[in-house]
Amino acid sequence: MEERIERELSQKKKDAECEAILKSMKNHWEGLTVFVDYPEVPMDNNLAERVFRGPVVGRKNFYGSGAVWSGYFAAAMFSIFQTLELSGLNQYLWLTEYLEACAGNGAKPPDNISRFLPWKMSKERLRYFSKKPEIKDSS
Image 1 (cartoon, rainbow, N blue to C red):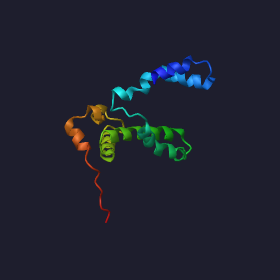
Image 2: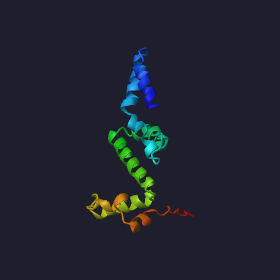
Image 3: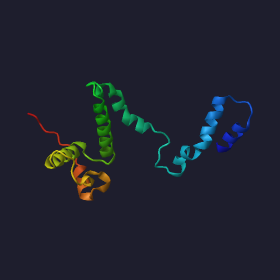
Image 4: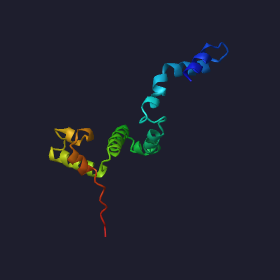
């Protein structure tokens, strides 16, 4: 494929758009083929696109209050929740504990935030936060 790009680029008869695409492929070839050497890297970004579909579709609602800050807040929360999801953690449990830590620290973020970062948590803490959400019976 790489040889074909070179061959196509060397031909005289092609429009500017085609040439731009071929040059871009040549310049980004390493990134375009990274999945060959690293099978854990997907060939496409469909999963990422699906993950962001909800926030994108709901974007009007996030600005519905007329405050731009609420859109930024929603984006930050989606990022946090997606990180927790990818780490296999219970978001409700994590958020409850984080907000309780904030309340216990005078309505400020905890002094040591690392205990809430999945990549810094002990195995015990990861196990604790990986619990399935409890559904409480309201009857």
